[in-house]
Amino acid sequence: MKPSPPGPLSQPPSQPAGRGGDPSLFVRPDLRALAAYHLDLTPCRHKLDQNEVPWDLPRRFKLEMAERLLAADWARYPDFHSDELRRELGRIHGHPWEGVLVGNGSNELLSVTLTALVSPGTEVLGAEPSFGLYRSFVLKAGGVPHFLPPRPDLRLPADELESEVERGPKRPLLLCSPNNPTGDALPVERIERLLDRLQAPLLLDNAYGEFCQYDYRPLLSRYPHLILFRTFSKAWSLAGMRLGYLLADPRLVAELIKVKLPYNVGHASIAAGRVALAADEEARRRVRLLVLRRPQWMAMLSDLGFEVFPSEANFVLVRTQKPKEIRETLEARSIRVRDVSGYPGLAGCLRVSVGTGASLRAVQRVLRGEPDRSPARPSPPGPLSRHATPLPGRGGEEHGRARTSADAMGRLAPSSPGEGGGVAGEEGRGGEGRAGAGRIGRVERATGETKIRLELRLEGGARRIAVPNGFFGHMLQALTTHGGFGIDLEAQGDTHVDLHHTVEDVGIALGEALAAALGERRGIVRFAHAYAPLDEALARAVVDLSGRGTFHYSAPPELAAGWVTADFSLTLVADFFQALADRGRLTLHLDVLAARNGHHAAEAAFKAAALALRQAVAFRSGAAEVPSTKGTLSV
Ligand code: PMP
Image (cartoon, rainbow, N blue to C red):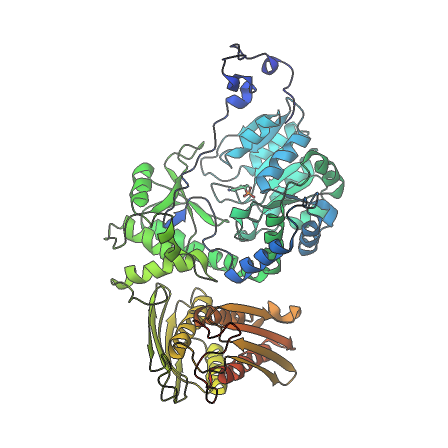
């Protein structure tokens, strides 16, 4: 913390605060005058108040992060400045790594940068309304906020800022684009015009940059006084890990590094960041989905009578006559939005995160006054909340969806091992039926996003597959044909939003059907592996019907994030088998060892998995128990 500037602020506390006195009076009076940051963090069903994305990082990446964390030596300090993460970020953004600085959230870096740049009493330019913490960052740094007043249309005041910069170009400018809480963003040329006029740094907070049509990064190489702040808290699903970074001129970063504390980012955040970056296709998918959903939210809110402001972020600002009443009505139904009506210029305004389809329907239902069939509050935290643990791969989305199934269908999900669906295992249970007369698993799942009916017959039979995507159908045909399974599958899904829900939910259903058909898994081969080529492509699957869901996957890096067809990305193969492994309670190592195109890679992977599964589910001759080095395997 900087020492107090000279002048009235350095006066001793007005009341003696020695023995028996109030020690809070020792705090600098300008800082005592700050309001504490406060938010309601109690659990709610639809959390739309903090601009987070609705989906947790898929479980397989969290497991990878946990592995990395286990491998780290906790007794040792982390790297001073998280250099490996800086290098990866530099590579991703095409920016010299020495010009990257990593912090405990981008908040920390904003504060550090202002502390480094602002001399006591210096004016810092900005605009209202914007991110609430800016004022306190400037004050803590000893600066004087000079934030322009809101425009009536709530757009970022580009012309006004330009004039202000021309009037005094040596004042740092702190700007948020896309702006929180309005969602407005400045085109690149407008930022460029400001940079052309400024003779001081432009601190450009780009926390929502991934959702925005304008990319400011190319400006970095031409304007050494531009500092771009980014965060892992939004598009990367890591708000809980506290990780942010800035991109700037390496000469400036060399100085900022002296102001920031060493070891400001611990092993856990570094590991999370590196795993998230390695899974960048996941982040891209999340962003694509939210950008697609944004107009749906805007249309829904506008239909409900709100004035809706344009947004380039993952949230939408709306105005109404009765913000308090609406916020409370939603809160009573466990939907939390942010009342921003106290911000300058924002009387009557609420800010709503772009959430899942389930959240959208919930908001719509409540504000239309339709009956809500779900309980008003989520389960309290504690042992019961284990049921609400987001399922692998789709995190909070799945959490919402399981309940949506009950809401939307107006009935409770049948009691079953999995949320949102019913499973029946037949004739395969216990040692009976060993002759293999018919190991059958049946699943019905209905959620807000997909509707699936599936019968899987391990002993073979007819194959009827109806799914809303040709390539996916082709893959399921390959899986069941080479697996020797009979199947009757009918799946519908919200493919107009994204194919992902349907692919993953069919994986879940197939896994559950497989687990049900396998029953207690006595007498089966259990371990198996297979290679499958398809021309130049080669895939390997190693299976253990272990009773535990574990999935490992790899594909050649140049193909891993690519597209198989115009609407089927290769990552869907991993998502499908992850769901299958989780719900089928099996270990699956699936590696695409070579491939030149995505189609061949996917098909070889499905065939290898099929061939391995076919062997693993077969009965061993004369066996009665599931083989295990620990004795009989309990499943
Ligand atoms: N800048 C803006 C505009 C934000 O809205 C937020 C978070 N709400 C942040 C920065 C802080 O991000 P982080 O979690 O990286 O500290």
